[in-house]
Structure formats: C-alpha cells, structure tokens
Amino acid sequence: MRNAVGFYWTLPVPWAGFKELPEGIEEAAKASRTIRYQCELIRHYAKDSNYQLVAEEVFLEIEPDRGSRYIREPLRRVEEICRANDAVLLYVDFSMVQNWRGHEPLSDWARETRIDFEKVWPDEILIDGRAFDPHKHFSAWRARQSEWTEGKEQRTSRALAVARQLRNGKQTYKAISEELNAQEIRSATGKPWTEESIRKLLGPKR
Image 1 (cartoon, rainbow, N blue to C red):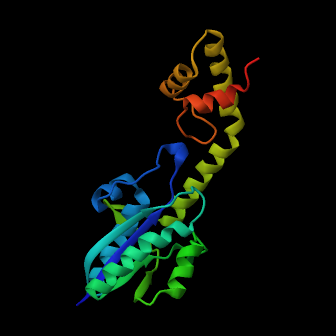
Image 2: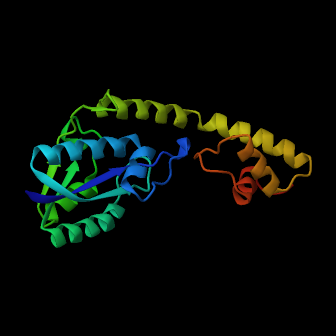
C-alpha cells in the first residue's frame, strides 16, 4: 500500500460571506461544499486504489472567479510532504469534464513537478445520502454569481441613499459604516463597509 496526500482547493465567494477556510480538514469541509466533495471523493478513490492517505491539505484562492499563482506556495508544501512520505499526490481535476472550474496555474505546476500525482475524475458521488453533481453545483453558483454582479448598481444606489440620509443626520463615517453593516446593506463587492469605503462612497465634502 502506497502513501498518498490529498489536495483540495476552492474559490472564495465574497458576496456570500465566504472569504476564509478553517485550518483543519474536517472544519474546512463543513465550511465549503466543494471542499467536502473533493475530500469525500479523494478518500473513496484512495481506498479503492489501495492508497493510504497520510495527509490532506486545503487552499482557498484569493479571487472569486479564477485560479492564481498563489496556489504555488501550498503546492510547494504539499510536494515536501509527498517527498517526506514517499507519497503520490491526489487531486480532483475539474477541467477534465467540460472545462469545469479549470485552474491554469495548477495545470502548469502539474507539467513541471517531479513528484508523482494522479488527477481524479470529478464523478457524481453521494454526500450524506444525497447525490452531489459538481457540474450542477458549479452551474448554480455561476447563476447566483451573475445575479449578484447584475445587482451591483442597485446595491450601490441603496447604500448611497442610506449613507446620505445618515450623513445629513450628522452621523460620522464610522457610524454610517456600522449602520450599513448592521442592516446587511452590502457593498458592490460584498465586503463589509468601513469608514474609508463610506468616505469614498459619499465623495468629497461639499
């Protein structure tokens, strides 16, 4: 039985408040359905292929819509783990089917690395007794992302109207940011309002 290391990654979803992952694998899997899927799939694959998983690593990308070169650092750490344990790296290659969620920097790394690795096909699997189809999952998220993007102007207009009303009431920028956050009035990017972002929203004093 050969050792193996599982590597799982996903994208942030700022508008949904998903901007960080817990450090532990199990906690990360609870926080992200995509991480949970990869974790379950790789564990099943390892068992069926007579591999012993000796480590699992996760990575959250920095941009919500693309892979980045920043994946190189966690992959470097994974390479060290693989060499130390004479292990093969296992990861789900979503681009193998209809170019789902491709990650060009990850593909570049795969062409350059000297460690053994295996790309796992993104099959539909059962999670908690229910079928999980990654294609449908990502399609649904893309649709929600489009809705969020299209609503950017409306969110900005609403925030501006409330901010102006509060500013006319002599509220400070800090107080306005806290009130907008309390009312869950999102910014264009989905990030929490800050004193500085309110100042930019309202523009120069007149």
